Amino acid sequence: MTDKIDIAFGPLGQGGQGGQGDLVVFLGDDLALGGPAKDALGGAGTDLVAKAAASEKFKGRSLSAMVLPAPAGLSVDRLVVVGLGSDADRAKIDWPALGGFTAAKVSGRNARIVLDLPGVATGPEQAAAFALGARLRAYTFDRYKTKKKPDSEDKAGTSLTVLTADHAAASREAENARTLAESVILARDLVNEPPNVLFPEEFARRAGELAKLGVEVETLDPARMRDLGMGALLAVAQGSVREPRVVVMRWNGGSAGEAPVALIGKGVVFDSGGVSIKPGAGMEDMKGDMGGAAAVVGAMHALASRKARCNVIGAIGLVENMPDGGAYRPSDILTSMSGQTIEVINTDAEGRLVLADVITHVVRSAKPRAMVDLATLTGAIIVALGQDIAGMFSNDDGLAEKIRAAGEATGEAVWRMPLIPAYDKAIDSKFADMKNTGGRHGGAATAASFIKRFVEDVPWAHLDIAGVAMSSTSNEINKSWGAGWGVRLLDRLIRDHYEAR
Image 1: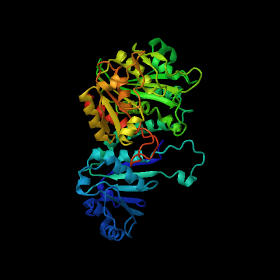
Image 2 (image 1 turned 180 degrees about the vertical axis):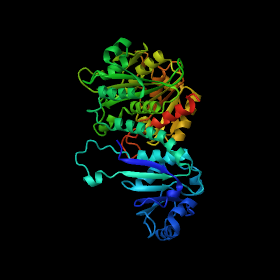
Image 3 (image 1 turned 120 degrees about the horizontal axis):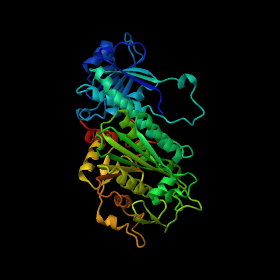
Image 4 (image 1 turned 60 degrees about the horizontal axis):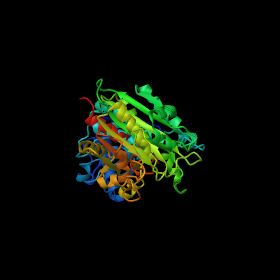
């Protein structure tokens, strides 16, 4: 859910008009205001900014701010001056981050924002990205709090009027940004929900709501999964009283018969570790072990909302991994849908078992031209890369580069990790075709090697998002526990490389 925020666009000449509220202007480390900002402030306001900067030792550094009472004669309540930094900073502005930072400075208020940045080209695309960041920063998840703020505070929303050169084009461009923000927020809500609310059947129901946007949604129940031979996924679920589901979502926005791009998500709605139970400390975070599935649902929402000109299939495996008398055990041997057999070494290496059967189903039924899976798969990737960047493994250099570029463009960065024969050899089993873990060393890589055995000859990439999907580093566009990571990356990947022009 999102705190109330309204965003409109207007021409730059309205900066000094509009009555009460805040006025936001931008400047660099040279403290020079642009022409539209000077016009909006007038002589008294411009002098006030210069004097206040000197007295407050405000240096105009990137993502810094100075809040001032407005001088007499200016019809606003406050001036908010936002720093842009040096010329080098201004050459690589993160527009969503700037929008999020600015929105936070005027939260709960009305503000006019003079989006004319000295020395920086600011067109409709940049204005829309700014608005995207503002919307994402406004997100909160408090639906289970019973003690709300007083009515006068609770009803206060944020109202922004972004003043820019081509405001009509910016407004049109920002409509796509609005639906993208809604898609990220959908994913965040899913990750933040408690597992007693978002069990597999309920997750499947929420994914089914994409049908309202024209997405074809098919839900597989356990009987259908047994018919298909999904022995790996079903084994993970058998210790829980909650039945598993597989949801297949199809967006047919491309040419008839065109092979789809496939997005696959791990959806372990709660992971206790099963018989190989996790330590109690931090286990509550395992409600977020479905961050990959959340990203896929969010991405499908984004693609359908903007009527993407591409065929895309999204598939998610939804299970709960619990220990009871019927749970699967270390030393069990499972038969996957592919026919390959798997020796269970550790029941906490469950996500790869879920992905194995979902991937096989998609490869056989949809014959995709490219496939990306997202999974909160290993703690090892957090050890390797921390919580600001996802690990990427791929069997195709071209696909890997497309994902890297999409990550750079959206700020959802990935780092390519190696896949070598030694990692594959580490999951060979004495008793079955493979085992579900290759041991402690290189854990993220051996997990990726396990998944690779099911992708056949499809160009494929695996994104291990354990560090970025939940409890990740706070930033200017996300203060939530659940980040909704991957939605913007997947949308950009499809937009830039797979849509019809």
